[in-house]
Image 1 (cartoon, helix red, strand yellow):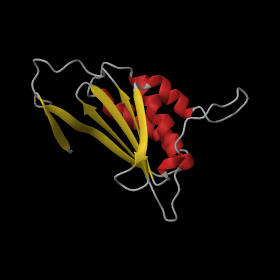
Image 2: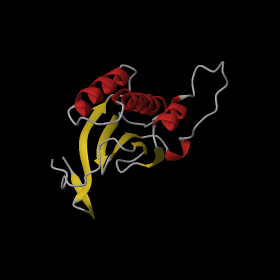
Image 3: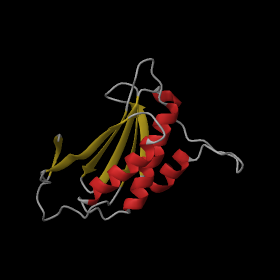
Image 4: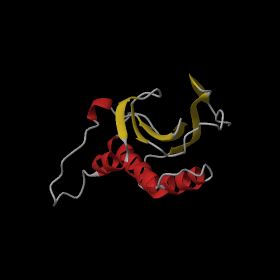
Length: 154
């Protein structure tokens, strides 16, 4: 596991987990199940169901919109950032293509980022450090304040 500190009270950023999946529809339920299993051991105060829905929507979008000329994978990582949970999903698609849609009631698709926007306290898309795109979502208050608890131990 990687960790870096931001210098505030010895508390920083800790990667809690990562998964890599084939860009196939069956990867969405696998991502949900694995995330639910691994995040539970960190006992977050936020809704695990809501965070699992974030993973599901972001992985679905990565599979639908990620593109590459060669075989590729979808990478999911999640971090504790002070008291927040940050979920990142990486794919080889072009970053400028990430946008929230306003679907009509009769549209079958186009609600993924609306759900992400309604659940997460913030979300962002941009270039991934692996190449392609990363979409990240942050859930604030996922853990109690660290006051009196010292640094995060990995």
